[in-house]
Length: 281
Ligand SMILES: Nc1ncnc2c1ncn2[C@@H]1O[C@H](COP(=O)(O)OP(=O)(O)OP(=O)(O)O)[C@@H](O)[C@H]1O
Ligand SMILES: [Mg+2]
Image (cartoon, rainbow, N blue to C red; front, top):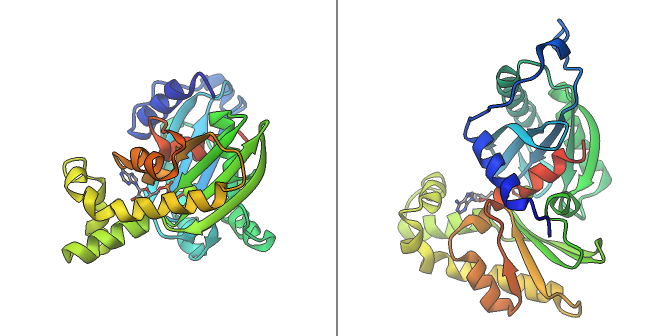
């Protein structure tokens, strides 16, 4: 696994919360706003979050933005105009921070998404004046960051649980099934009588997460049983959790219990895939 993972994720956390000690050499910014140095830009259009991340020439995170928005569902763009508007707004915020224009970006799609739908994702980038210069599947993006050779990457996002099994550094099996953070929020909303939006907030509040754990535990167990079904017949001796939902405290322990497989949780699972997408630009 990547020895610099924890440092990389800590830096990403820092830039996502606004801090940005990085400054471009002003001599490299043309009057048109185009930067002549190298940056790597990634866009993750998720079911729950749209994430934009910018890395410097050494692949170190220098700027980022993320927004809750339901513009795609499980890799399919369901609100094209909304997605373009959101990405434009996020791009413009980052350009203000950096002092130059972003011109190209990479993006990704969940495994199994048909070609025509993938094109819609690339078109969101074009709509936001970004050339789509890199396009990969999400598990491969995640593994640009994790750098595992064997085991399974489990991406529990907003809408789905994606599983990718790696052998000798190559993806040998993928699956993507409904059940993700949205289902956690729906269960919380249903059992407490609050709205979905309120449940989303409550779920992410560290002061409420222990109290809510028994309510969402069955959904985590379901994620575990999905994993079990897909790794059966493959020799998987480690699970690597990514995706925002895996940030729920205790999630990794339940997954380990249900699957009986050693489970590794990076310090900030939400940004693993977006970072890996940027590395592809
Ligand atoms: N601290 C947290 N604790 C629990 N859940 C969280 C936390 N932070 C984010 N989430 C949840 O993570 C989910 C979003 O994760 P992520 O950005 O990986 O998904 P996505 O890429 O938008 O969705 P998908 O991959 O399914 O298309 C949301 O359901 C959100 O509520
Ligand atoms: Mg995702």
